[in-house]
Amino acid sequence: MSGGHPALDAALLRRFLVERDVPVVGDLRIDLISGGKSNLTFSVRDDESHWVVRRPPTSGLTPSAHDMNREWAVTSALQSTDVPVAPTVAIDSDGEVLGAPFTVVGFVGGQVIRTADDLKTLSDNDVERNLDGLVETLARLHEVDHVAVGLGEFGRPDGFAARQVKLWARQWGHVKTRELDDVDRLVTALSERIPTDTRNTIVHGDYRVDNTIISADDAGVVRAVVDWEMSTLGDPLTDIALMCVYRRPGFDRVVGFEAAWTSDRYPSADEIAQRYATRSGRDLGDWDFYLALANLKLGVIAEGITHRARAGAASEGAETAAEATAEFIAAGLGQLSGATRG
Image 1 (cartoon, rainbow, N blue to C red):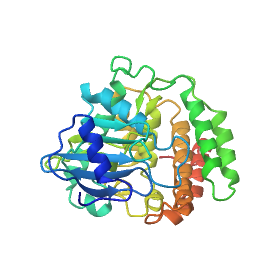
Image 2: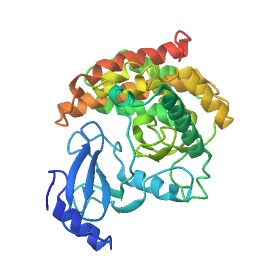
Image 3: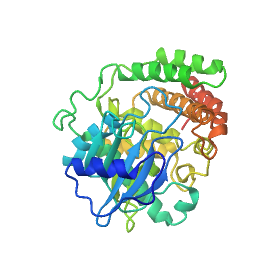
């Protein structure tokens, strides 16, 4: 075996694939695609096939943050829909092979627009088409009949917004690296403003350009949506709100580089929200609530990155990601007070 990695043993993976009747021709060649802040993603090749393997990071885990089984369930169910996802191949749901659960899917060719430099390869027209493709794909996801595709038990959509507030408050308790009173203030304000008129769909939970693979020939074509470990059944407005809040400049500090998605070459958050509303035919409801909730989520995520870095899962910028937390929490409070827009 060649090109292995400490977190993905080539011999064990090969045996696993063969035992599940997946044809393997020759040695496996393993290369790390990404990892550190979230799940580890590997490119795996033999002499004929190309797969992608994903597993949780090796340290600094937080409860339910990296649910391979969840990702597998939703991507398997979406195989029969017009939502583009990678072909599912195999899963070790119990972690018996590597000591942690992992999934194997077919490799999807295309391009990933992650950094500001990646975005430079796209013309202004490409960027416009890309945004339209992203909005179209998200709207299609929210149109999927989750019961018809076998995801009727995928989550508890009733009371989703209230549970999200509690979830991220609880997560803050797991990952905080210092006290920040504004987090409690934001949680309280959100709890007092839970929307009563909501809809329930499959939600991705982490949707933005770099969690998609787009066509190498047409930036408006999304070939696959990836990174589904945060997906569930819930309020679709939480997806589009998070997509908008990811546009904040502070997100660069969360990921540790100049992100494509924060570039001013993309339209404003307000315009993105309006395009989604127009395409989906969905009213944005108490939009300030959804933006404030998204700011809470991203603030806690930023804190969690630094928390995991201190536990040993270091990556570029991870030690300082929590510096962005206060900015997002303040933006959430401002959203609810009407002081901030977009």
